[in-house]
Amino acid sequence: MSDSVIVASHLSKVVRTSEAELTILDDVSLHIARGASVAIVGASGSGKSTLLSLLAGLDLPSNGEVELAGKPLSQLDEDQRAALRAEHVGFVFQSFQLLASLTALENVMLPLELHGRSDARERAAQLLERVGLGQRLSHYPRQLSGGEQQRVAIARAFASEPDILFADEPTGNLDAKTGQRITDLLFELNREQGTTLIMVTHDARLAERCQYALHLEAGRLLEQAA
Image (cartoon, rainbow, N blue to C red; front, side, top):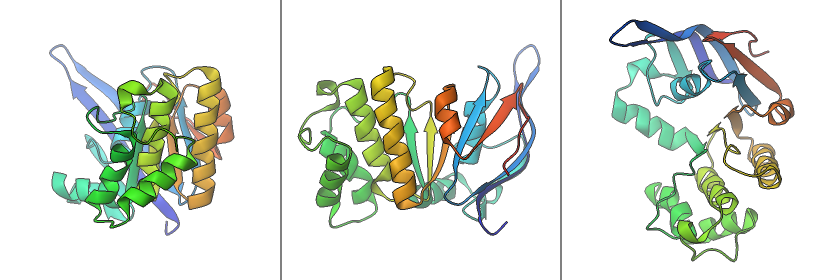
């Protein structure tokens, strides 16, 4: 569909162990509209993070196809998928994944420099100011709280103005108050930049704030995108 930024058709993911084959995802089809906010929900082990990885092209399905920004991922090699993600995708993970040897400012500058932006420092400083860390530019991750590190990660994710932001349990390691601030920030940036927001979450309140939820149960999709 022309207004869909992601289309998945009959996705399955099977992992072979020494004892048996384990089906993690089973015949999942969906489409996600440009600019939408979508929660991927389900019990632990239902396949949420696996689905996120397949939609983002971080992993390939055993069967089926994902089109990301109009490109069928199965027709791209690993380098081409990485280039497509660099152009269109941002990530926020539960574990922050900041580079310990870089300051907050340098962590946010990194994707901008990789894109060849001459205003990387100015843009990174603006984003950190936007997430409330204007006084923390020269601090290293070890000098920041968990909530502050997550805000740096969000600033970094939005630095290259991605079409799609994938977030895997973005508030999972945060206290309720900090988690609420992070959630508000994600939705504000989603609205302001028109970024498609796709979140794996076990938080029902967070899922309710999304336009719709994709419910997984034992690897199968119970509710599909409208």
